Length: 224
Image (cartoon, rainbow, N blue to C red):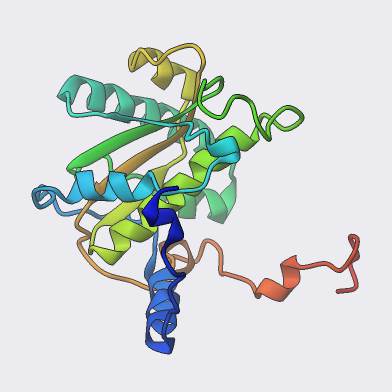
């Protein structure tokens, strides 16, 4: 048995719990980046931390493509612009005007671009836990992204998830294997400004609502 697995479980102090709450509060979707490169070793350290994430059947299905080539980045940005123009057509009036003013990508400034995929048929894990719910592989990848996001915030690094994209087009551009499914396009770098309130809230798009509005007892009921 690995000695690491036999370590005594840690007890987290009240101070740590307070800081953890602050970490969650300050973990924001960043779209305004400085162009400065990450300090040496930071990205590798964050990806190693990400690999501690839980996964169905211990399958570790996350796959990262680090995009450094300017042409590939340009193709990804063109993909975003096309999808964004289509998304704008789905709104009217004041909502359309507000959408047009939002900055929804940090792709032009962020020094680090990561395309995140899910291996839909990993040998690791041997299928455990996903026979009836194969989508748990993708859920595992999203869990890993959240770990990366929190780790980045703790190191003063911002992360932005660009979701306004045509996945199959991007997958073709990056020559990803057929059995990989696209999950996320992430931009990383040092943020131009720090904020604890979501930008979409400060810009008037959508405020957060209380957690109690999303919890139900035993079965769905509108009378929570």
